[in-house]
Amino acid sequence: MKISVITATLNNAATLDATIKSVMHQTHNDIELIVVDGASTDNSVEIISRWQQLYPDKIRFISEPDNGVYNAINKGLKMASGEVIGALHGNDTFSSPHVLAQVAHAMNNDNIDFVFGDISYRDKEGKIVRYYSSAGYDKSMLRYGIAPPHPSLYVRKKTFDSIGLYKENYLIAADFDFFIRLMTVSDRPSQYLPIDMVTMSMGGLSTTLRHRIFTNNREKYRALRENGIKVCPLTLLKRYFYIYKFQKQ
Image (tube, rainbow, N blue to C red; front, side, top):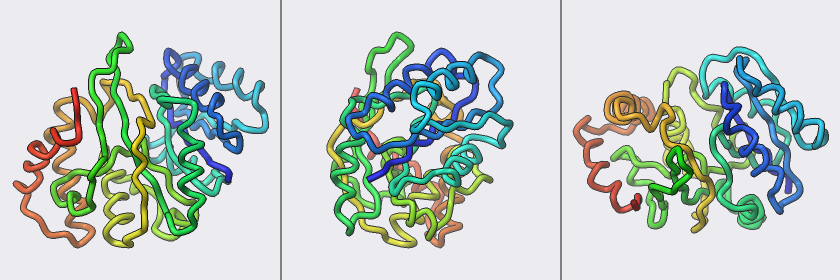
């Protein structure tokens, strides 16, 4: 089973080498890495080119201006040839070399359209400071603005073809909108993988305090309403009570 990994990156030269290495060192061999660089001004392209020369049959990349991370991911989705597709951003890494092997094992079940799992967060010193578990997740929690962690999501290409790509008019919640379409509107069958799949770096757009409190909630409310799920805006505040069930310090 071929798995496509899309890496959207912009000026991540300090961490990009580790990101690509974590993909190329996966024990699942049938993979392709599609790097979508947003016209970086650091030496990102040099790093990508070096890896591409080492793995010419497994790495493809483009470097050009984009209209944000979801536009970049959509570019990668259009390039992807794998049966299953996921995303790994340019400052994140797989948490173990066996992640994609476990994804492939689960997706060998033709009745499963997508899988998701757990992720961890590291600080600037590389110390794990938070763990987000999707154990016990139920799609009804979307009403409270809670979705599984997007970096752990792997979806069949035919499912993207059916329900569409990420909506590019969201700043940080297009993945939440996609989860609604995936889990509620189309009600696709899924499987939870009880493993730490991705180690994320703190400090990204969606982890800054202002965006977590204001932009995130505003866009999630909009996504729910646009997909026909009527909720009171205050309902989303309940997510801060639920979130401690899924996140561990």
